[in-house]
Length: 234
Image (cartoon, rainbow, N blue to C red; front, side, top):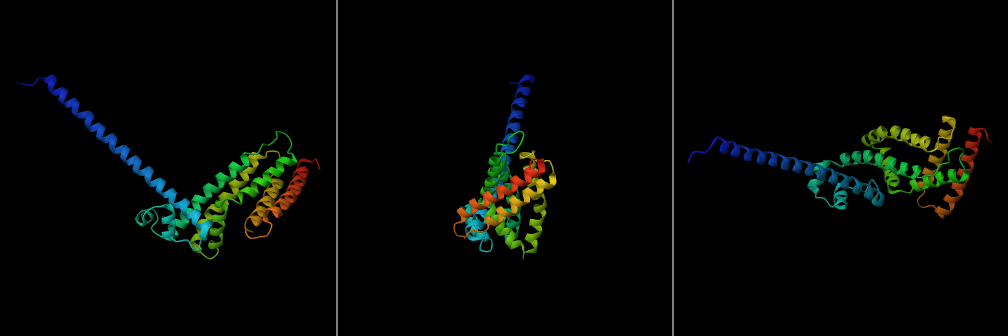
């Protein structure tokens, strides 16, 4: 029995969707593999940060990171073929994470529309103190200490440091548009940053929290003076 022309067209039409369906499955598979790879990479970087906090930079090995991330040695080497590769990648990862954490803390402050109150200023200092107690800050301090004698790591750190400082100050300007002079805002920012960082690395100091509260109060006093001088209300 001869097949009609219409029958022939029908058979041809039935084949086309099948090819399209396979192509779609292939694309979905590729997308899943890419997502899986990205998730594995992130898990490794987060595990590295935890290892820095727990054991320190010098004691952290790729095997330890792989174990903490619960990935195979092969998966670890696929994403990061050497210890220096993962360490350099952690620098970039922490750069983004630290900025996001700082922004979250600062943008959560209720800032008045007109003049800053002492309460708001103190809250910003307290937020800076919370920031230097985060695991990301501790891990980054480990990297900074190691970068002093590790040339390759120092280069990776220096690439993000300038951008970090610029973004830090940009966040402060956004949260506190009340400061009229950039110079006075920079001075206020530096005062908070350096004092809080100094307290942050004093891990084993006695009565740490009690001493921190006293310093927070003192820094708040100075910031209030800087602000009042800046606005002409002193």
